[in-house]
Image (cartoon, rainbow, N blue to C red):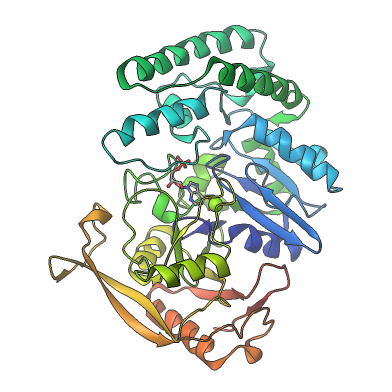
Length: 432
Ligand code: IMO
Ligand code: MG
């Protein structure tokens, strides 16, 4: 499996593509999250941003799985399938969707915005991607959500109508009690797009994915699980409530796909050489110099692949990373965007402080952190862009990476590759 170890946007799509290129894996599966993810893959002249379709889309031999743990935005799904087709990649024959995956309704995104409106009255928006993630997972827990497999049942329309009626009552509650405004027209448009997408969905391969995966594994095939978001956005172990609504940690691979823990092998964790975060909540490692943060945004193209929002930029946060590695059991590490360095000195956050005291454990709320402990390392400027082997990397970058490796030594993780650009070929391997 491949999971993010920061606040998402670590470049997971690129590493998944890289792992799939080795030919070791015959399939790749999303196990959680939904269209809140934005995974960019660049191969030659082709760029594809997947929100729902797994990152193996540009590898013609690879099967694509959407697991039961995923919240499926059908409109996004159909749009991506069409886009891929126009790029020369018809994925319909190799895409399988779990009949137990969760169906995002056309009102979930609106309810997501309504929730945010409600929260903003207290001044604490989460800054969600407005893809309906919170509302759909709430419905799953409340046992009233529609599942993907439901679309093929004879009473689907009836079920859907009942569910929509219930959701409309929620919307009215937000409107009457909290002044959340929406246009009827907006709902009509969303409904007609969604209804069309459902028609297309019915033509796709909806199956008992857990069983299919079991079959593939018993044929001796290797599969990859693709994490969305990152450890710091995990609903249980992230900075609650500034998190996403699913478990992003590897432990959820089993439940989100229906495989046993015996099927698990390597756990690849992905980080950037620095940190970014979008949305509300505290971000202790944030670069305090606004000009420098801005420069990072530009150089790293740190604008959301899903929402286009600028991402806050921070130094590498080793304190949070150690927590994420401990929770994930990661044994292999990808370090991306190591070519991006904009100052003579790079800072690294090694600890959090509260009222002058260095914290031993990760705090319940990141807002409690009022200062950070940092260390400084010499920077490497712009000279590592596109570097393809370790020998050509600048000594400063090599010492930065060696420093990270040493700081994580007791956690027993090996660095696999180091990314130096967006293209498939822009990376070098690291012998540990
Ligand atoms: P990938 O897979 C970065 C963030 C949102 C918000 C919080 C909750 O591309 O790394 P949600 O819509 O999930 O209810 O929003 O989580 N968020 C992400 N940030 N990358 C993502 O995915 C994200 N998915 C959600 O910005 O702060
Ligand atoms: Mg993203």
